[in-house]
Amino acid sequence: MKASVILKNSREKSLLRRHPWIFSGAVTKIIGSIQPGETVDILSSKGKWLASGAYSPFSQITVRVWTFNPDEDISQEFFHTRLKQAFNSRSLLMKNNNLTACRMVNAESDGLPGLIVDRYTDFLVCQFLSAGTEHWKQEIVASLKSLMPHAEIYERSDADVREKEGLKPCAGVLSGQEPPEFVEIQENDLFFLADIRRGHKTGFYLDQRDNRAALAAYAENAEVLNCFAYTGGFGIYALKYGAAKVTNIDSSADALALCERNIALNDMDIAAVENVESDVFQILRKYR
Image (cartoon, rainbow, N blue to C red; front, side):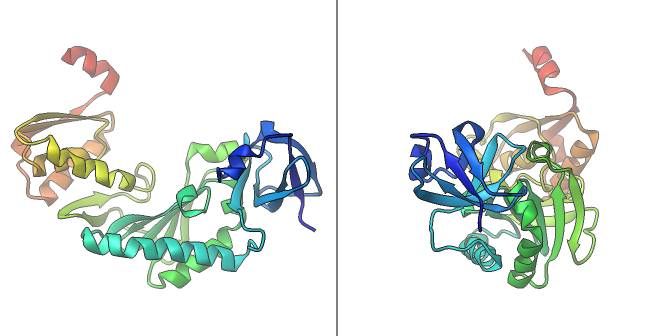
């Protein structure tokens, strides 16, 4: 029999609005034996079934909801269906925007709390950031292999947030081969080298694609200061849209070196770019 999490009186309001988190302060008691990541039923103070989700005893978010449908079983089939829906929703996006890299699964937005899956050409890079996704990791990887059989699958669950879930950092090959030092990706008509083994997040800030494109309205003939530049994504977009000069600031010499390579990869004028290795907060005081 599945364990149950009982909410305090009137604490189900956010669930009724389909918010997928149950905070520890909303829980009055737990019925049954349950291990981290296992599935629990969420009941109101009057015993009404509200949802089912993944239990996390170490986090302030005690339960992350998998489903609000009482007829939906949390199983291999559940994860395969959610992952397939997410992948299908990105296929047209990638085709229409000339993308070889894209966030394929965006956690709660795709009904899979704590799971990130980013695609870099033929590599899928995963982050399992919650007790629930860690518990179902084997099933999730099996579904990813089924949905994209030719893909190499790599884990980058080395984010600090895992500690709040009682999980240790984890990174390495989940299926296939070790990624190369850099993977070349295309975003619109620009190209970038991404370090998916050691770079920030999963290697590139794929979730900032629309914000980079938004520079088209502002960059022409402008002098652009790109703080926390990382590998130059925003700066390169600014150059594409006609910026007169771009100054990239980052504390990482390695990131700025890759930024230079990305500028060259797109045949842009390096003379219009100044890369500054510095702490942003300190150097901004000098720029005033």
